[in-house]
Image (cartoon, rainbow, N blue to C red; front, side, top):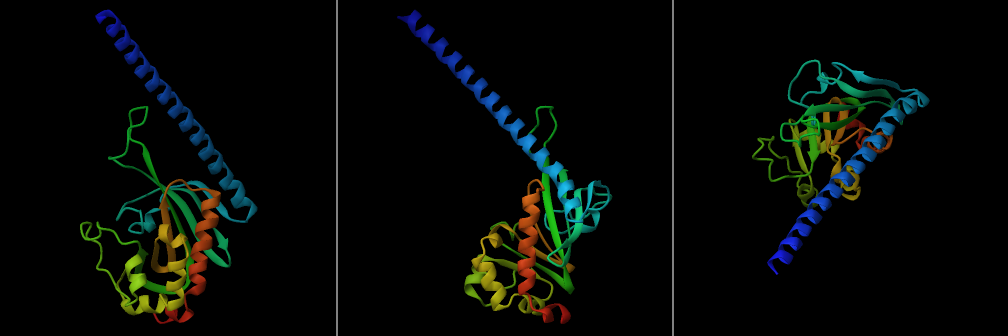
Length: 238
């Protein structure tokens, strides 16, 4: 009986080991397929840019430095590289988009023993005038812990509950976030996952992940949809 129990335990151990090996192989295969898909999307970016008359740089050293402090970008830095740096015109507005990469010390370790890269994709369109700092995003319990700027309330309960607005000039925010703009942001699902930031004469959004052709179309359309609803006087009176 004891011999039978021992055999069964060994078989169980072997089965567990084989199962773990099978899981690891499947994970590697999925990872390889995902890498190929991403590489394919990156390769398409240059072709899409050429077709639409946009400029494209696969690697643009220093280009990302000017955006320090915006969205996912570090507060300061020098000679920061923008990957897949694309500029051009979209729906009558000048735009830029790029991918920023950095090593997160808290990220998982790669098979080669190094830390995996974190990818951030940044998009911006030009505004008809310049405005002070303004950022719109989802509220978080970490806002106070992270020392983020005080929240500006607009006396619009539904909007104030769903979005967190920070600014250096409340009058600018009230001119920008009219009832029409607030209704759009409340009703459009894109607003939930795409924060907005005004810096000078540019409107930004961003997300964590790789840059792709579809993402460019989606985010630039979103930024333009927002810009179309902001009254002209909001920029001229800033």
